[in-house]
Every structure is written in C-alpha cells, then in structure tokens.
Image (cartoon, rainbow, N blue to C red; front, side, top):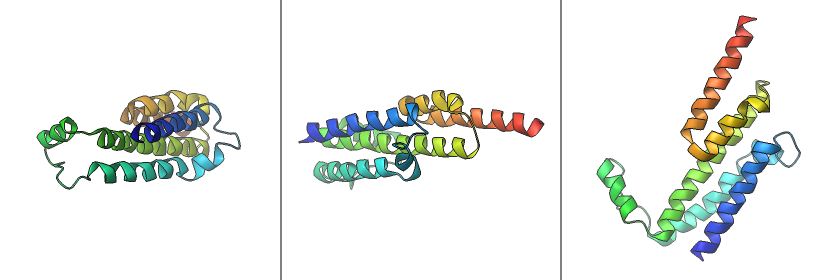
Length: 143
C-alpha cells in the first residue's frame, strides 16, 4: 500500500509541476495556483504516512544528532512522509511564485528557472526568484 500511495503522489506532483512550468496562464493552472489544492492533497497522504509510521512523538528536532537519528531509523512510511513534506511545501512556494510574478507582471520566461530550481532544490528556487524579482523591480524603479 505504501508504494502505491507514494507512486500516486510522486506522479501527481510531476503533473502539477508540469502545469506550473509549462501552462501557467491556462485554465487548468488557475485552480492549482489560486488555492493550495495540491499541498492539501499531499497533506492527506502525509497524515496517513505519519500515522502508520508511529508518529513523531520521540523525534528530536532540536539537535543535528536528533535529526540524523530520525533519518537512520526511517521506515518506508516515515521516509514517504518526509518526502511528501518536501513536495507539498515546494509546490506551495512554486504556486506562490507564479501568483506573485503574475501580480507583478513578471514574464513567465524570467521565472521558469526559479520554478525549476524550487522543484529540484527548494530554497535555491526561492533565492533565485527573489533575485529575479528584485532585479526586475530595480529596473522598474529606475525608470
């Protein structure tokens, strides 16, 4: 069951990112960008994986050693939960970037690389988008 649910989530997120990357102005993308449906969907599966893995009651997030121990003791379900955690929040940020860029009239061509970075490298995408945004704003402010 874990493998099937994981595959559904992993395949679904690829489709959702494809829509963000290649069809941000199309009708199919509007609900994905306007509301966090994708992260909400992933949150349901995340909750399931956390529940069946036994939860995080004994997890120590306050030290690096605690985090390392958590990863070393990972089960397939807890690893799936961890991965879905990344997928949900990275997509949330990607959708925000599309909304923010549209609101600020930044061409999708300029945010394609930051979106791709967010999909693949999370925080580097936020950094890249911020650089694009501030560069574009600086050019606008200089006029």
